[in-house]
Length: 458
Image (cartoon, rainbow, N blue to C red; front, side, top):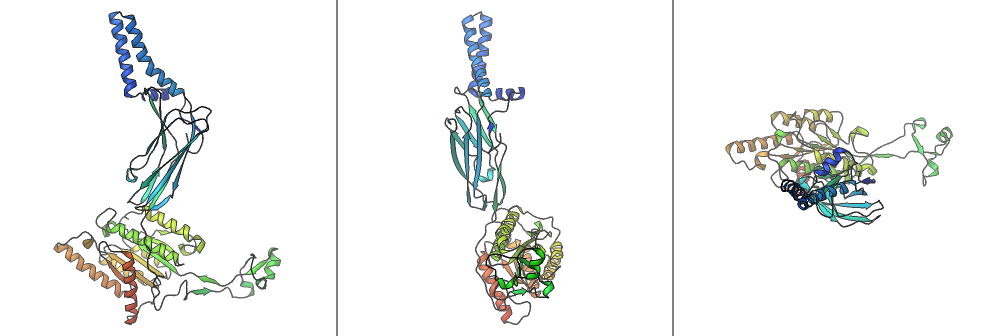
């Protein structure tokens, strides 16, 4: 029986199905059967015919209920609708269930049950009264998770009972849906600093298709195009009205780098350092997409999302919402990498100038700090949010204090390499750190410390 399609609430007349139906006897049904067998045995031993008839009645009644319930064929359809199907961690989604009786007979009492993972809450159960022929019943329930991930909902189950409560059978639909719980995102303040890098906005660069008459790339005529832009040679060649392309703005690019190495983070749970980094990366990429940047998500193992289009960045503005959804879906299930280091991400960045690079790093040792410093050379501007596990775990031991000292040294080296490096203390709010990064960038420029100009956060 498939959700959304007609299906019988029973699975045929095979011996295996009948055996399963016998296994559905309730405690009452088993008690009646046991009492009937015991009465029949006593009647045979004592030679009491009346007692034998009583025993047979007690034993046959639950068996008759099993056969009748097993042979009853209700035809119902079930549909499930999520509203919405993608929610941030900590938010609620509502699941709407609808049952339609498409048979010519009314149903009996039905118990509707949906399977959900335990992290979403208790398993929802609903009791549906008699559903008339062609009738419909609709119910709904809410789910919520503080943990990001992809959670299957279903399959939907129906539990059938006979009028005497002797037998209970369960029939399942086969379809299920998926709820995607993405990381929490927070709005970030727009930053427009002096010396903003060329990008989408006042300082954007334009690529011109002006090489010559033969190098013009025409496109089909659209309603509202200026007729003075009609390219007659291409019109004659293609047999339809063609116009010259206008100058196309080159969208500034931004790469959001997420360090997922397991050795770089300590602790677990919704309030851990790694979850903060994941949420921060999600907030940054959504913010930059809203500001018109072409954005991609890159992890330390070299995997880039969306991975298609020009250089793997998100496409046009019309595709930004889909690209954001794809990247958030990736962050919903991202886990720790094998700890191979940042070299694979550096290899991806080595191809060309990446524009703005926003990185979320965990603990960096000497080698990984050097790799991160080289990454900065491939970007027009670089902002790094560095999380120190010793501070996040509250380690005040001498070893923890030594680790904190090494973290300060790593920050200094990143700043010398041109990064705008910001330490992330436990429980910090990303909007405040985002604003701090802008201030640090402005101070660096005013002090004349060199390095690429601009932090185009808005």
